[in-house]
Every structure is written in structure tokens, then in C-alpha cells.
Length: 219
Image (cartoon, rainbow, N blue to C red; front, side, top):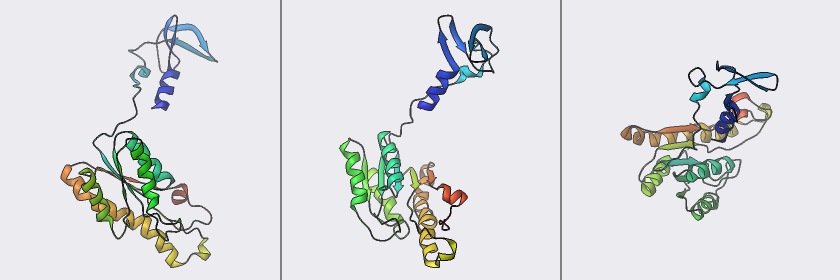
């Protein structure tokens, strides 16, 4: 990707005298060229690990079916878009609930899919609940694209409250979607992963979940 390309261009430089390596690990013949306060030396492919760097094109996912829960929101939309752009067939699963988890709106997933399809990409909307209808989410992938290879557990809700104000029902509401929802969707896909001897699961989290944050006691 771009970062790898940038790193490679920094480490391996070309000048009229030949390829020059600015890396400290290279034991090639010293050159007269200096870079900042570090002396550079002529690149020696046999002694420098920099020559092993490979600048790769972005990964492609042609033939891969990806299920993204919470695929209509900001991060889920980004997951769906990036996978679709790289050739994957994407199930955008989202009930379109409010941030608190209440209500539903089918257009949330539909609009993401419409945008992807308009670009000639492969995507389908799904409106099933991650806890109660996980099997139906995976069934959408099977029916529309013939399989499932990747599950991105991204669906979530928020009940931002300080611990003293957190009610049990609020805590359970978050735990139900984040934890049980991830379990249910992964479980529904698992037998297909086993049968094809391949599968990938991605769990979305946040700094608040990893390290904690004021007013965000729920996971």
C-alpha cells in the first residue's frame, strides 16, 4: 500500500552514481553522499535487508463474500466500501437503529448498497437482528452470493452513562448487541467456515472498550 511504497522510497534511493541505501543495516561501500547527519553508502544487495522490501498492490478479494454487521454506519460503511472496491461481494447488514439501539430504518443499509451498486460493485442489504436473527444474516450471504468467507462484527449501540447512573437494562442492552450479537453471527457462519476449511472473523472495538473512558462504563 501507500505506506509501504513510501517506506521503500525512503530506504532505497537512486542517484546518478547508482542505487544508494540510507539504511543503517546496509554494509555496502561508503559513498561521498551524506543525508542529514547520517552518512549514506552504496547499496549492497547481498548485505542489506532493505533489498528484501516488496512494495505490494492493495489486496484484492475477488470471489470472497464478506458480511459486515452494522454496515450502514460510519465505520461499517467504510468496511463495506473498501471490501467491495477490492472485488468482494458484501452483505451490508444493518437494522438502522438509533445510536441507543432503539427503532429501525431499512434505508440505512439500502442507501449504502445503492451507492456501491451504482459504482458497479457487488453488494446486498440485510435487515436482520444480529442476536435474534443471526442465521438469517448468513443465509442472505448464501442465497445472494453462494457462500460466506469473512464476518466483520461491527454492530453496536451506545448507552453513555457514568457508572453511578448506569442501569442494569442499559448495561445489558449494550452487552447483548456487542457481545452476544458477535457470538451469534460468528456461530452462524462457523459451520460454513469449517466445511470450506477457511474463514475470517474481525471484531470491531474502540479505545473506550480497550482502555475505558469517562461516561462510557458499558463495554
